[in-house]
Length: 325
Image (tube, rainbow, N blue to C red; front, side):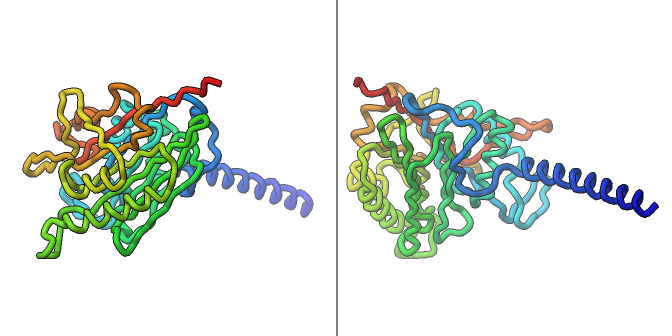
């Protein structure tokens, strides 16, 4: 009798362990891949030679923060609303970028969540990702990619830059492309001497230009939300001192604005795409766009219009043909 009970107990324990393992595995998969830089992926598009689409987008608080929900309730440390995230999935599915620089991302956990959502909802794989820890511990910059990183450039620059400078280098055949992202200080200021933080953004731009120049390599992209117009000192600094060329991006209607303040409907060009002169030869002719606003817009059942962000995605294509030999 004891032998039989013992056998039944062992069988029961084995069954419980198996069920627990299955549930644990399912929970892990549903949560997405771990929030660390991935160097191995089950499926990565072949990019040994060919083209790359590089994009940039301010995600508008893709993080956990205090906010009002759709029903008017105030929530603490609340996630980005689902409808806004769904609009992002829709946008990514339409643009289908290979490398995306992100601003106003929370942390590596949010990067992993976004990558998992895009895999499930848009059929896009971004197994390579990195997020920068800087002075602004809430709204970070990050990069997600379908191609592996050869090198990661982390420049927190906590003394002069609120969000730092982040870059990656990817291999395309025998070429090496460096993609940097930057999110300069907003125009919200507490200084009477610098009422719109123009001097602060200029200082950040100068330091970023120095760091990019020090990184080496001729093929370079700098993208991001610079919080300033094309003719501003900060943007001019990046193009002159950083010897980069700004692309004049437009949407399908010929409009170049990238940011809209919904309360007043004021529109500005705050997001920029800069490339090195050497990279211009690899830019696909006619590419370089601002994503149409409709691509990031969803209409809810009650008629409410929701946008993925108050910024529009910008993107450009680059082709790297194999060497003649």
